[in-house]
Image (cartoon, rainbow, N blue to C red; front, top):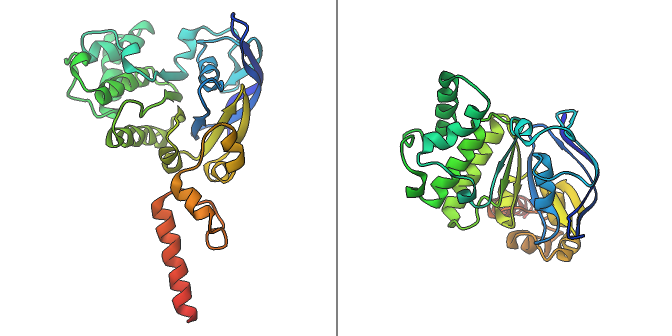
Amino acid sequence: MTPIIEVKSLYHTYPSGVEALKGVDLTVDEQEFVAIMGQNGSGKTTFVKHLNGLLKPTKGQIRINGQDIAKKRVSELARQVGYVFQNPDHQICFDSVEKEVAFGPRNLGLSWDKISKRVEDALDAVGLGAFHKINPKLLSKGQRQRVAVASVLSMQPRILIVDEPTTGQDYRDGVDMLNLIEQLNRSGHTILFISHDMQLIAKYARHVIVFHQGKILLDKSVREVFSHTKELAQTFLSPPPISLLAQRYKSLYPDTVLTVDELLEQTMHLLSLSNQTS
C-alpha cells in the first residue's frame, strides 16, 4: 500500500504550556478506514487538526501524499484533507444547502458550471440531492451533518476526517452516517474518524490508533487492538461486550470476535464440527 499520511516525531505544546502531543509517529496508507480512539485529553483531536493545518507542530514533520505540509496554507490543505466537525452547526453558515456546499469550490475560483457540478455530485453522494434550496437550520442533526460532509466533499479531498460522527444521534442515525462514510471509503477516500463507540468501530474500522497522554498506545488492526484489553484499560476504554464475552472462552474463539454475527457464525461452525465427530 502507498502511504498517504506520514507523521514523524510530532510534538505540540499549547501556549498555556500543556504538551498535548509527545513524539507521535504513524503512517496511514491510501484508502484506509481508520478509527482514532482515546479518552478526553489524550491528544487525538489535537493530532487530527495538524493534518489540515488548523494546528502547526511545535516539532516534527507531517507529509500528506508525499509532500511536507509545513509551509502549506489551510486553504491549500483543504483540497487534500477535509475535516467534518463533531457539531455540524460549527461548520454551517449559509441559509441554503446549495450555498453551503458551494462555499469551498467558490473560494477555489472555479467557474459556476464546475461549482454547480461539484455541489450536485456532493449532495448526491450524501443522499441530499433534492435539498439544494432548503435552509440547513430546518434539517435534523443527522441531515445537517450530511450537509457538512457534502461541503467538505465538494472540495474533492482525498482524505476525510470525521470527528465523533455519531455524537448526539440515535443508533440508527449513527449507523446511517457510518454507512455513508464507508461508501466514501469504497469510492476511494482515505477515512479517519474519531469515536468512542466501540461497537461501531468494531463494525466499520479496519485500522485503529489509540492515543494516551499525548502518545500512541496502540496502532494495529481493529482485531488486534481489541485483543489488548489491559492496554485499553489504561485509557478507560474496553472492547465491545461481545468481544469480552468471546475472550472468556479463548479455547473456542482464539481470534478476537468483533460482532454478534461473527460469534454466531463461529458458534454454528463449532456445533457443526461437533455433530460431525459425534
